[in-house]
Length: 106
Image (cartoon, rainbow, N blue to C red; front, side):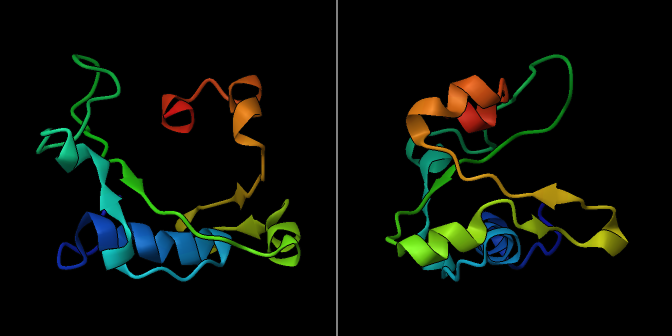
């Protein structure tokens, strides 16, 4: 969710990456794939079923093995906002085995 309109999609995504993964990114390091595809409002995950739209962003970052290991099974999320998140590090080739979520599949 975009909590602060002035941050925009990329600013919100960068903040969430730091919050959830511990990775510091600037909004300018993220590529808006949704915008590149010409989908100004985003992609509807369930057309007709809800009115939300998802934006997809891309960033590429090299991390050390130690940094990657520190991310595995990290408990994150803002508890006072009802977020209980466990970060899973999964090889990209195996993502379809652990999640049917279309956002993960993208």
